[in-house]
Amino acid sequence: MGADEKGVPSVRATRAAGLEVQDRMCESCIYRPDTDFDIPDLERQIADPKMPGFFLKYRACHHASDRRAVCCRGFWDRHRNHFTLGQLAQRLGLVTFVHVDRFQGKPR
Image 1 (cartoon, one colour):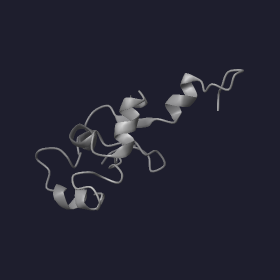
Image 2 (tube, helix red, strand yellow; image 1 turned 135 degrees about the vertical axis):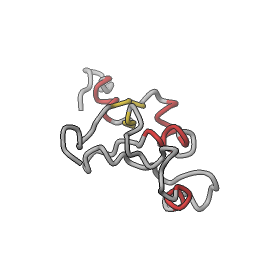
Image 3 (cartoon, helix red, strand yellow; image 1 turned 45 degrees about the horizontal axis):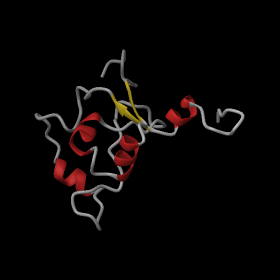
């Protein structure tokens, strides 16, 4: 991790510790208005059982690689304030919007 002589983390290292959010909703996002997915059921799977309306984790974008946990933009737009990491990342200025698409240029 990059740090100065006093041990203060560099901006680059701090950003790497933040939350990456897809910069736009994917063409096949489960949160699109025309989706056939049962969103309430999918959200129940990650719901916080002790705090109604909140989530234990976030939905990762299916267009990001399996090793890169980029937050789904549709989930972010609806629930950015309803999961701990989302709240903390916003307050600390550690949200980074990225554009990643493992399917780009590949036939689907």
